[in-house]
Image (cartoon, rainbow, N blue to C red; front, side):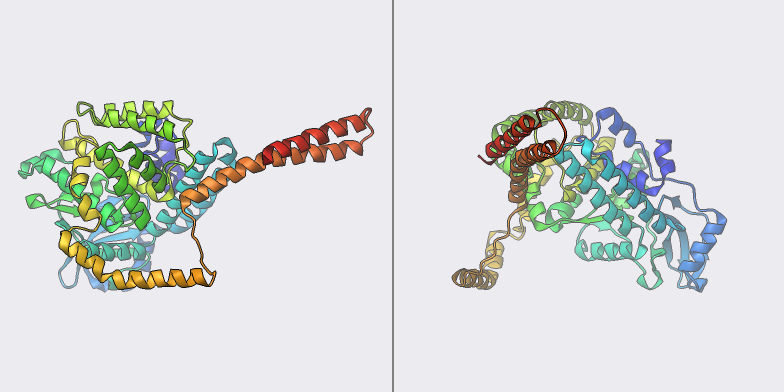
Length: 475
């Protein structure tokens, strides 16, 4: 673990993401990866002065600035300060040269991936590429304090009605090197003793956290992707506070709906819907055999239906089941990488307060009770019908456009990701024997030009084998 930390910011952050990937690593590796924390030594005095001077050419905006950081991570460190108006603020300073270091590390990671790709199966290779691609985009945004400021402002707009405290950004003082935001007091969500001393019910607190993240992922499709204990505070009265908006992820509507269908199918033990939803989500390849997938779903549902299992024992059994089904074409699409990370972190927080906490026994009922909200029907039946009727003119206009395109033979069809994956697999299977046959035929022509005994007979044999391989492949 020390070696990973010494490699730098990208490798440390990537290790944290990979700590949720049971499809890449065995359990003993995952347990080690989960112990990695993004806590590093603060900048030295010289680096701090350079960064501060670049971020605040005119420091007179502050009446006080504490040079000793409250927290220090691989990308930046947080300081307490006061504005001239007397407001208490938190200032996040970006580390000296971290943006250049991140770009260098990303190029190195992509090079390693390119070299290692032949060692993995097609689906695992695609999953690895998705992780690196998603991670690269995320960490580039995380190193830009202006991007984090925009994330924070979006969060405040979208979740203004949520019972969660969010800091307020001071955009006029923010730059790529520094983010200035209101200071928020509270205790870490994993400080069980302090929370108990405040008279706060831990189970209700975790339930509130689950509901808030359900709202982010399944309703808004816009969620905070780094809910580790240092970024979640508990205030008096049990109010949650959320910090650090460098890692914020957006989900497409198709992914959001597929996730809702997975939740619904898991709750209703609907095997067919579960398999279909997993395919739409991109977790299972389109050519996965239905009988094998049904068998797998039955095993998973049996595991999750046992309320006596703890989170750790459920995880162990689930991993054993996954290991026994490794020949199934599972993969993890790019959009789901950080959903898995968030789910793992929240489950870890739940075990702090709730005995036998697990993501199915304790989280699934909450998700089930909010499915109508997630599907956009939170206002009730008649308001929902009213919303649909209000959108009817636009729907009719779109239908008219489709009919006009059809009449003019100008209709364009967009293939789904599932269909494209299926076509890709079939084309690859068809091209493999053709390429092999072509190599045999090429070898036949090469043999003819050589000074070898029996060269004509060998060439004929190679040509025949190649032609036969192509004919069989085309059938």
